[in-house]
Image (cartoon, rainbow, N blue to C red; front, side, top):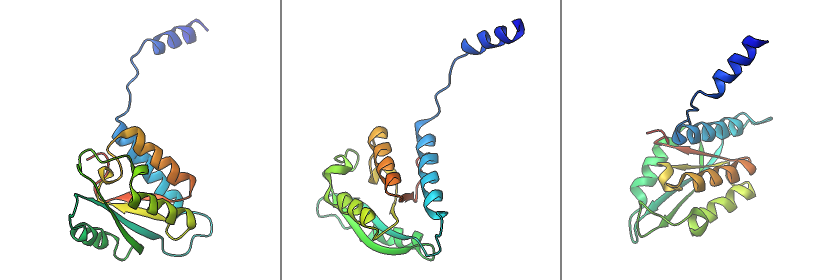
Length: 152
């Protein structure tokens, strides 16, 4: 018993290492994807929305072409949606973008099973807001996949 107590005291005084939030968010996103893909009775090809951000009057076609190439043979592409923002490094919150809200509506209605984006910055660079979006997507039995994972 004394040994157990000494062990417990020793464990309490060791520093707790917080995992890298990017790796944690990547694991969460991949879990959502796996859960959606392996859902009970899932036999059809998953349907996706291709989502990009551009500057005002920017051309989303190169990004959509890259996403189409990534999705080819894996998913059924349902829509291509983009939003225009003034600064790609600091876009408004996803809930304030018409294209992202349209994607959410399509996911909620069952038109698509997931969203493909080039990087998580297309969705949201802020960790807390990005995690909120992943939670919403999880609540609607959907997923997000990225060409560039969060950890890179």
